[in-house]
Image (cartoon, rainbow, N blue to C red):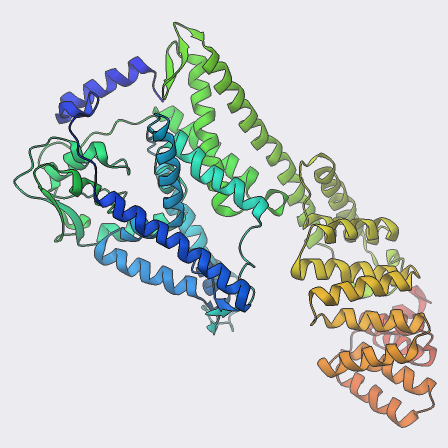
Length: 632
């Protein structure tokens, strides 16, 4: 990020120190085109075609091999779910320990995206210039430790002594819910744009790999242990063609001169350097790994970094702030996309700061500032940077309110079942609950009012705060909005809660419609069947209600409420023996908890089953005498 003059001065100084060949200081001439790049492009294209075929096969068959994605390893570490992603990542690490980072160079779809973006830029005459940072280079490793080591460490420190350190492994190699862990198209498109085009344009052709990819953090470590390296023969004349061709920002000619091989863990074994060497001096071979090499023959190879040390420190804080601001905002931005956003935002912030402070500054072929005056391109760059940084700041403000609202939601103590037993749950709320409801409602409402997008995960929480505040109608509206932006299990739960609250409001037909919609999304949602039975019973459709409750009990015999409801039905029909049998079954699975018994009493009373309701009210009073006076 130096100005044009500063860049040339630094490059000349560096050339004197490490004897850069002339081809690196002027326009490259006579460097032949890499033949290997064609084979690598073909391999990456084939990889993407196989990915498309995988998705198509799932669409047609409805069941397929689980995603072959390294991030799926987190499910194995956290829940013991052995999937295809875990096996692939394990084999990739093992292969890297032997051959080096071939998987990155020849088998990564994100690298294919970056290469494609760089190819398009070169077609319009722009060669991505690598951005070099001392501190941000550690981001991939830190991200990898967070993704793959932290879950086990957290489990070790937080688990009860009786639990094993590692969860029980289960087979998840095949799945019918293939897309469960992938973002929607609305998220995938900006993800590909940011982690592809923007990172390449601002940070260099391997910008995402260098400053964001957590998998590369582990592959980089494994590469240092690998005996497979790009090595050199005595035929090398230090022409520098290899370094000019390398897209991974590796000083190939300098490293092979000092070490006899490429030791930089950023080398992704693209093999372009071998292909363009005019003397055939480079080859891939086995020998000592990086950690076993001796010191360089001369002084350590100097690096020409884009930032001063003060800028490095500021950049680290900007990166962290940007990452925290955008990660998970609106329940949309995934981990990898947040890393890419943070890397680009850091570059823009530091470049803009330098634009305001220096007298000369350029970027690619653009003159941003000349003789102390910001040029048109400079103003455009500054406007884009302000927009990007401002969007980050706004996302951070929204994310703060989302986080605080979620924390308040987690602290609510009143059980859902008890709160939903009657329309106004206010008398069940203690001082802590009331405080958290007010705080959570304030924060989530602020995030909703000023956010640019809808947070489909925050809306149900805000709806719950509204319901606990006594505003059932507003809660129903919010749950409807949430369901319209959700799918699968999340949508089913929003529809279930909406149907339940509509039941308490006396809108039984609307409640039944929502509960049917919830069951259409998730057939095994037993609570929706239980609640649907209540809707039908209160609509006077008692035979249908009995059928629904019977079906729910057949699916799960431990449903104490349903067994009690069927007992009440049998009593109303004069079938006393059958009623007693259902009561006994209910009693087996009814905990001796006064709140639970009071909840059962309220639900049965709503259905007009007063005799059974009184039984549970009395049992609650026996277990806790305060129910006699407080809830009389």
